[in-house]
Image (cartoon, rainbow, N blue to C red; front, side, top):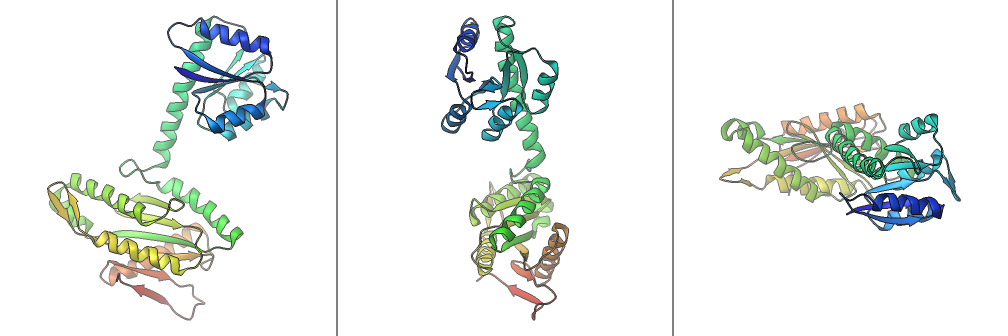
Length: 310
């Protein structure tokens, strides 16, 4: 059963669309009909639909802005525009603005509309898959470097607007290479996935854990009441990753070196923040690992903070 949200203010056109879909015997369609954009937005917020059939001329919405509002309400749902006008320019603009297809009401056989809905659903799934591949690490499922940078830009803006400190952590695993060399890359991959799971357990849902590549990870800590909160998270992480990992028949013991910088105390652009966190992480590595260090701005009376897990 394919669930359709039909947004159409004309009862005649709505019945025609429903009759066309009812004639299609290969798949069944469960159609919910609403007459206003506001009703459609309410339904999208409360229920799951596989696709939307959208008229661009509604009592409370007109033209491409109607399409954009629907997309903003649910960016993942495929939208097919049903128009009373055979307008190639508008059709192209609708597709350029995110519609999966543009059809003229009442034209074509039942298979045309049914096929358009099915293709729209499959194209949207393919788009989501490509988006996922572009933004998430395939091994661990964590945010990748590209999406991490986007999230950091947004987090920095929120930090200044809300006047709340933001913690940026750069993490490098200790003794990971010997695991790869002695136990094999398959075990190394298992270890990276297990590390990703533990890191996510150490932070909140609002925080971002990313894999930058290899055995290097980053964490964005948002909505902090004070900078001491970052220290608590760093200690939690070092303690968690110091516990042995059981990987099928293998056991691996590693640690983690963490470099931390705090924004906007460290008021620089992204690349400089990452350099500062990397330098702090390197100092932690030089101290023997399983530890964390903070980057301290040059105007601070102290040059370094160092801690090992208690």
